Image (cartoon, one colour):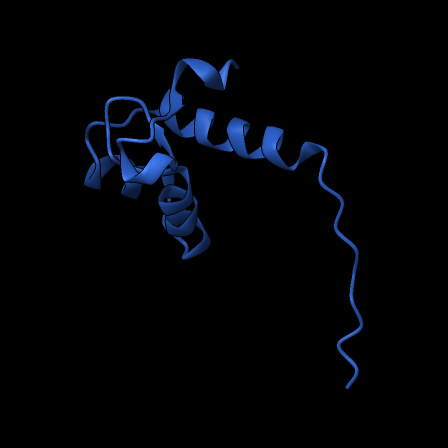
Length: 78
């Protein structure tokens, strides 16, 4: 999947946050809906400008962004 066909960052739209092309729906916002427990069906029903391919692009974009990042577990002991 080439997320680049579906995701763009434009400084004139949401201060340059990555959004689904042709919308003002940011990748961050859509991921937050899934993190809250929304299903694909709920997102598509509430945001009819999206389709399954756009949602797949949101996840593909996120994977690419995280691919080279390294996260280390931190001790929660005080």
